[in-house]
Amino acid sequence: MFRDRRDAGQELARKMRDYRGKNGIVLALPRGGVPVGYELAKELAMPLAALVVRKVGHPDNPEYALCATDSSGESLCGTAAAEVEAPWLAAAIAKEAAEAARRERLYRGANPAPFLAGKVVIIADDGVATGLTMRFAIMRVRAQGPAHIVVAVPVIPADFAGMLEEEGVVVAAVERPEHFLGAVGAYYEQFDQVSDEEVRAAMASL
Image (cartoon, rainbow, N blue to C red; front, side):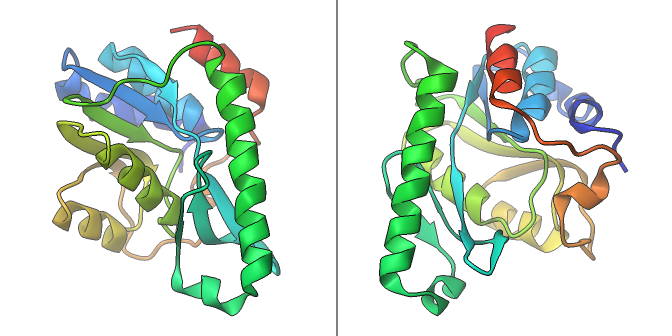
């Protein structure tokens, strides 16, 4: 059990000290992944940037991811996406893509998108549950030609971590439970929502 995201990030960073000094960058998934990514970037002496990926939730259960998308509008969907009507899904993806674009403008400002080719790219989040948004993030990063991709999370289901490693992704985690509790927040004592202001402050302080 982690106290909060900062505590989780610090514990994770201690396990990743071998990456310090490498030609790399930490890409944090906002909002919850940013406090974790901040601790990693600080410990590993790497720049920090936001990788904005949005979950498209099921209409009856918004926490259950049907698809993941970003500001491009490209998406990755799971098999459950076939359960909803196509027009509804298209509209939901477009809505989340627009929100992703808004957040990119807010978090990045006038700065260009980070250059990832040939770098060690560490994708940080506060945890992984179903893994759909993380898979989409990996797909988007891989298209830019990084040297290595590392998924860095405090907690990740053991089976999903194994699948990623079989696909050539390095997984750095504190906890890999065989029997996942069903929600990332179950592994935290404090799991409050992270605000846009906190994200911007973290980005500006490194």
